[in-house]
Image 1 (cartoon, rainbow, N blue to C red):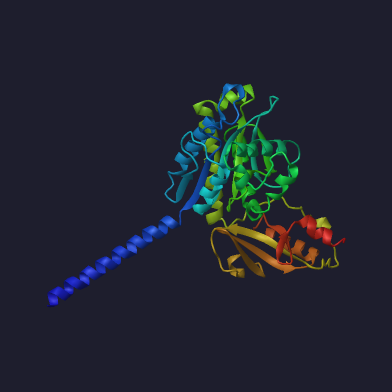
Image 2 (cartoon, one colour):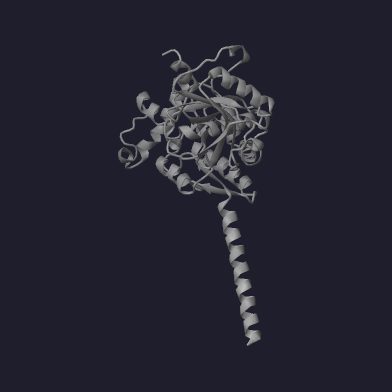
Length: 372
């Protein structure tokens, strides 16, 4: 009888350990950093065919190379919107990323122009649709006309209308900051590692990243319509160079998000300088200023000891990202002092943010409130 009891106990222990191991494996899998890679165009949507090159094919080859390199990291899960020459509707590309609860969405394309323009561009969602930015948005968004039910899927959206494109930036606005961080890393790598000409980071209303609920970028790896650049992008060597630059940027972004608690984050906000500081308080009624000191996937207690002694720490959770702030004041001169203090304490990328009625507003709008 005792022998049977011992066997039962051993069996129970083994089952318990097995269940813990299975749970740990499942938990580890869930904790993977999910990157959705989107090769632009495909199938009957060829994209641009500058100088006889095929955008859909080049974009796919670069995308697959990026994915292959990222998959070597055990803590990263890569999902593709397409791995072959098939047509995927724009809204479905975003759906794939959202269903996967992705950490990043990266869409890869090749550019085109009537001139011999050249260089890379990385786009994040925004309303700045003047000039070339609107041309790119219009061209990429016109893909919807190849979809059977585009009127239903896009609710009367007109790619040729500037008014239509202005509205689509709102849904992804909360992720734009992190998108900018990744976009800068990508363009820096194109310059420094791939030795390519960069046209910089741009903002435009692009449908493919309109409904993605995570940081998202659209990359134009170069102009197929430029004879030299098109030839370069059509080679295995050129595709590998561009893919490596993108892969490295994603890994650097992840590392900063995981380990560095975002201390180097820099966002294109209104810059504040020391000469703006005045001795008297500058109270702006109805507006609350804070200093964003970090953004990370790590959840930390909003305590001074976790942030180098800075005071009045608060935390905001957006998607998978935690944003950390220091200070809470309506005095603009006081928040400038707090920003300087954060920088002195090692948060070199600290920047001022503003809230009104509990909602984030631009610094331009906040400072305008003082004049109204």
